[in-house]
Length: 225
Length: 225
DNA sequence: ATTAAGGTTAACCTAAAGTTAAGTTTTTTT
DNA sequence: AAAAAAACTTAACTTTAGGTTAACCTTAAT
Image (cartoon, rainbow over all chains, first blue to last red; front, side):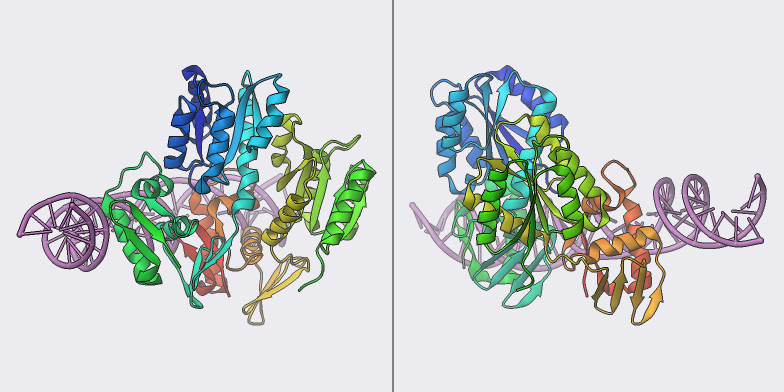
């Protein structure tokens, strides 16, 4: 089974967060939360969630503004964002789509609707973001076949190595911190030693060429062609 | 390039059909249309399109129902179906993924999005082997006769093994997760143990050669020539 | 030169897959 | 309708790939 989808909920009311968390975790999602827009942005950057639920009405930085800022971040460009809004705020919906929202959830929250909507959104985003083939440098990555080709030679990578490669190559040139990597591949609850990442990186270097995996000391790793 | 992909559009509004037809034909697709679910089903059976765009909201037989019926037809089992839906339509309709939809297109239709979505979906669905016979490596599969031939020798496979072979060989090289396999062969609701799949794989390996069935540990299985 | 971050290696551990045989269920035959 | 056979699933056990760690080594930055 693929990794649990990760959902970030941002709302200034703890009650709502609890409700969302309860319902979403029950469905097997991994949930993280934030109590305001600023925090939400931070957590989003760190956790790279698959979907973000944003309350529109929040003090200081509201949902709309948060959404706009999230959309500025390359690694979150394709994340699904849905707003949480009171029922009759039609106008906000129009503005919301402009800010980059993918959908709306209305308060009061109906649990079954919430869940089926989330499912649908994740599933909708799923098939399309999965450009199955990527080609960078002499390296081709085919997610569907779990197969990597380097200079025409097929290489079968183990799961973790493959996931790591997919992650790094999803934004070539971008530095991923160890934290990023751990969160994306292992999830925030699993604890593995720091050296583990190094070992996987080493294997990748061995198999795909040293030069493509660059270490930024004190920061993390990046993939380059 | 292979034959033009054929797309069936089903909607009760002629305007929408025209708009879809115009945009899709411009992209080089072959388009056929139907003004209601019943007609859509008929045309689908006759034309065997590669992809079907179904409006959710239609009088009499709605998109959901049509989708379900289409999924019942063996020759259309693998056809890609996407729903056409207004952005704010009731969420319960979004749960129509359960009816077997592959994706959603929202109204109002943004042409560029429409086209790129269609492209992605068709690419993803891969080569559609409509013929009943497939031949890969030394293995020939005749779906109609439920018959497999390996190096000229006929082999009679039991149902489950045959279905598994058909599934895996429908996209050689592609990895199918256990979940994929369970959903496709047993259906979403049936629960069978994990070891069951292994046993069937084992039988296939025994009968058709170990080398064709590859295990990707932690991920699933794939068929290769 | 010091030191903290990262690299390397190999041993270890574990979850996942393989195997087998013994139940079940379904289908066919008599 | 009973018996037999075939297909399917399961359970218990074995094997193994791959993931992790620990201990030690190297490097680069101040």
